[in-house]
Image (cartoon, rainbow over all chains, first blue to last red; front, side, top):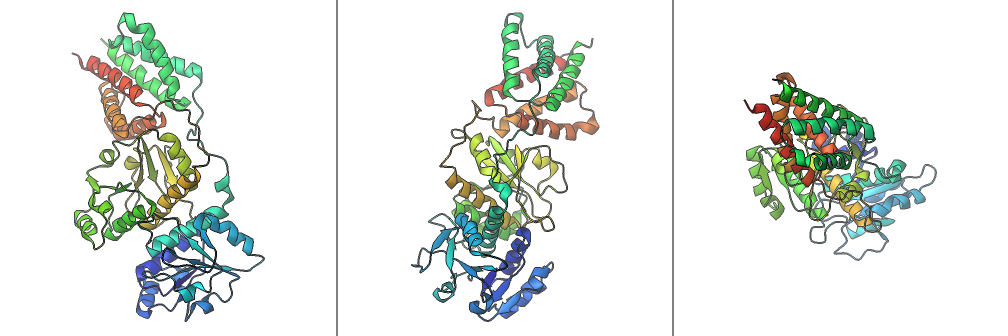
Length: 237
Length: 237
């Protein structure tokens, strides 16, 4: 990853942290403002990644060993000369371009203005994070995190798999529901909730409700214990 | 979106900025450190979104009108009571849970420790950003940006294939569940089910269980009536 002329040491640190979070290791910084660069590298908790980052004079040097260079840009103002991808489209394009041990670079411009037209000329494609038209400009550290998340996400095959189900445990067997329903029904009667004329209707409602809840065995058992205790308490003389 | 007890005003500002970037508008802050909260709101360039953010005393209040609450957590240390989704799986699940004008909340904990066990008991599911095992902890502003990017990203794609939903009625709002949980808790205590030493743990278990059940408003109300009757009966001299 390449940061061109970053100004804010907090952003440099945030970029390095996101790299570590998502498994990226090689950072180059182009023409940093020296005091801030020193500050970022000497910050408490600054990573080995930051310690071993390369500082170069110009972007050309930073990307010289890369087979594919991706520039990040908010493009509203400019008419770019290359293909512009939306971020979710990026990963397969990068994967298709790289072979053997060839490398790609993802390049971020300075906080205020982004990459210059000259910087952009070193890029094979540009990538744009889809943001709201009236609020397109992202914080640098956040833009880095979002881009690296997307690349890691798309590289992870497990993310394209089947839909997860919210139910981690299977529903309780019908017999368990009936056992529970029986005790709740007794409690309804003992507490005076169910007058005689309503008992049959209430019992049906209760069975339906327990099935709507899609309760699992362990929760059904928990509820059973509670209602048994309540019933015992109500009946105690 | 809800930030619980955020410490750093820069992170509050960064979270608000990411919301604006990805088209989210409603921010609640729970028990912020007041000087920092004032500082974040009065910062140069602080958005209208930040000006109109709500500040509440507790998480229960912040999510009381939400039918689906998603907690963010790094779960290495904890054994959670609810389903844990990986971030790329989240959007279709949220979309499947919301109907009509029901609302979901995405909840972030404080920078250092994340959400507490008590906070997590108000969440229907947890979501985890897939990060490197040796560097799992993300900066708060970056975590917010990544989550909102993912939701916006998947919102685009989900236009193509809608998920069918089995739920005939939307889930009850978090506030209704809390009302019900409160009465059940009193019943547990009145019936001697909950000894004093177990009350906090039982209350958390109960909140989690009510969320696992995906109970709708009318069933929640039915259960509330029953437990009120039981409680009245138990307390009758």
